[in-house]
Length: 429
Image: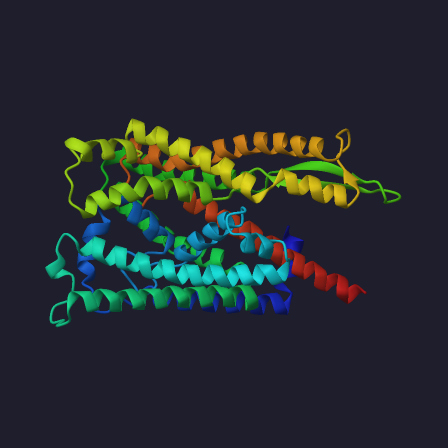
């Protein structure tokens, strides 16, 4: 491990890329402190405290949404657009499916369309957020002294926030092309990492500074220990892979190969989808000032708040559903079986064609079941610990944020190791 780290540190090209990435992330972080013009941000802070979904999205933006900066939406519209584009490739829009099969050329076309969709979504989301947050006190939406019609102000602020999203996409593209790669994921991970000091500080103030006796001190160190344990577990599960052995009939000598299938194929997408679906109804209820103690507001609260029994079970159910859906969307047993047959390859003991497809589907189903269980446990750990220890909403043990950080770190290290090793081989030749 230390030899690989030394190899990376001694590679001048890689270190320049790392330095460039850090510079871009610093620019992004600076942008999160630039507020949207005209909007009264004190109103935003009060609204966010009452919405679990907005708090969830605020963690992904590194606090940019809480400050309602020009980059408040972050990279989230692009993530949504990417998922929509992937779904549209499933024979819904034939031209999208055709582009998906054209290699790098088609990928470039799909990426361009995804960006256009992301900008459109950013504009719509900006309008919804501004109107929703200001619905309780529309007369206090603008800062003091702003003499601008409300409709003009809303459109102006939405355009500014949309431009902020386009700016973040450009920064992510710079990291992908000139930095360490995977720019979108790096932006998200950077936003989450910058919120960790605030989380530890909040926990320290609650349990140590304002705590009472040995019990509070024990809770603080136990939570920190639990965080480390969950981190180690996530790292292990993130690199866990099931390899399906394959052989090539037209190769002489040792021709063994394998098809690697990660335990967590779907990544963090199922948890994001489940959290979004659970959070949106309560966000609208909160913005509309609906009473959640009686009537239909009560049942919405029971169903969509995952600290309640019904909401808790629904949350886990949605994670399982989205994990299976997205795993089989990313890994198609039919395509893998077809590619193996075209390459004159086969799985030992399994007939090519339909039998191979069924075998891969069964293996993927078993792996996805384990992966979905792992994601569900990781998602409910913050909920359970918060209920037991009465933790603030900003303190999260495990959950989606840790999964993203570990995933980005593992993929980035692998990429840097590959690049450093390639340079070593070229120098040797």
